[in-house]
Length: 209
Image 1 (cartoon, rainbow, N blue to C red):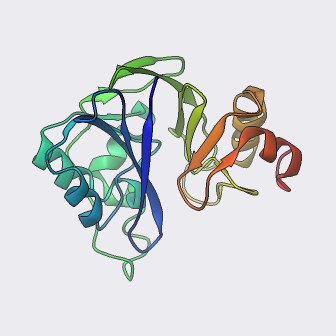
Image 2: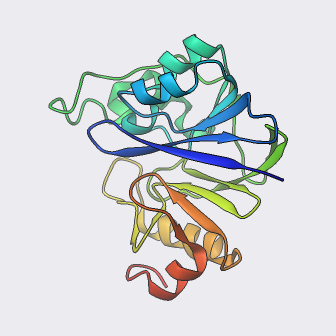
């Protein structure tokens, strides 16, 4: 089945937001709408947004949530370990870098995410993998052979673990125990930087092999 994926690099931290559409091109899912979401908001005019999926709740991944939710009246999904982060700038990190922007808060999410959960959206099935390490409630979404990894796995890199709630051992366990068990050809769409594949990272990533 067709899955159309568009990426938008948003905000001062260059966070990747993803717009996904299936066979019905008038319906879409958004993953991680970051700060300064103007280009994304303009693109979704005329589209019905079925859901906003959050890989985690750091401020640079949630900065556009409220604008999009209010414009499109769509639900938000986040792991419960980070549900409070949406409403608390100290937890989501937006107080740590005042030079980047003002404190960020959003309304609570409508739905929780859990390991192994299957979400049926835009005619496709999304499987939720709990992949902590960068943050305690980090998740990755697998749709067919497309993996949205948030800040867990990057091209030739991994997420930082020095922020509150981060843990290096958990990050490596998430990558080795879950992501690296996927097929080589699975395409990885990270929270920052360019796309990669599981096979390439398993063979070449200098941080976790």
